[in-house]
Amino acid sequence: MLRRPEKTQLLQTVPLFKALSHRQISQIARLGTEIVVGAGTRLATAGEYGRELVIIVEGRATVTVGRRRTVSLGPGDFWGEMSLVDGGPRSATVEAATEMRLLALNEHEFSMLLQTAPLIAIKLMKVLSQRVRNAEASYSV
Image 1 (cartoon, rainbow, N blue to C red):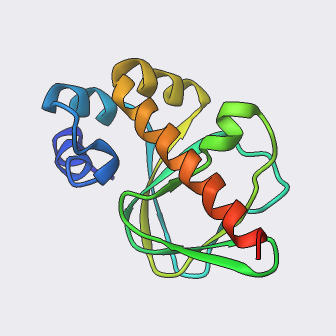
Image 2: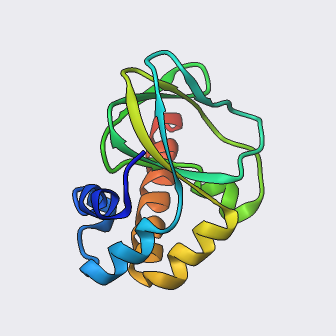
């Protein structure tokens, strides 16, 4: 496990946190749990309820939505925000394509993140909107 200074340094490389101050990133470094998983690990399953936001620090994941849409995620990408926002089940299945280093934030930590860095809420809204647009585009053929 990383010590807080190392975690802070690592978080500074995550695109989701790029516009944040060093102080804000230091506060975020107190949150979350670092997780290392091997390739092939199922990280989320569509239809199940999730209670955490997961941010990819290192590695790649494959996301499957429905039966035909697959997306690749890498460092700085994340999932789980929809379940935290609306309390509904996960909309996709996520599997580690490579060994990965992740930062998982539970519901309380997610709330703290948004209070610590409101700019994150704006970034999350943009990502959610883009995901809805992409989903609409894939079904309107």
